[in-house]
Length: 137
Image (tube, rainbow, N blue to C red):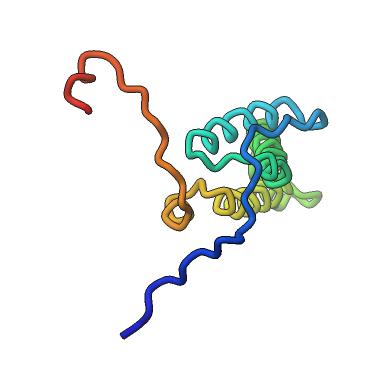
């Protein structure tokens, strides 16, 4: 018979709950994403001021992604080389790198379905109002 999962240690570090301040050096796109991520993490009851760096990295990569996508919208994904051959835009590599980093960071923050299954996060509290409120209790 296999033993079950190990019990959690009582001396585990407890993160300091709270909303970390937005780093001033982030661009406008990253700052907007910061607010979205903090709302999601707070609703899951896992937001901590100790998450500042990972949220900052995610938001910065999100801005890189959006800037790369905007550049490709203007220039295209395929460019002409100096001998009229087609070549992939350097923005494609930047987009792919940003997506890889973002995927990893999303997982670390518990914002993917697989990661949420591993995290002991409380389900978000839903504000159910309107004509269907009487059916949900």
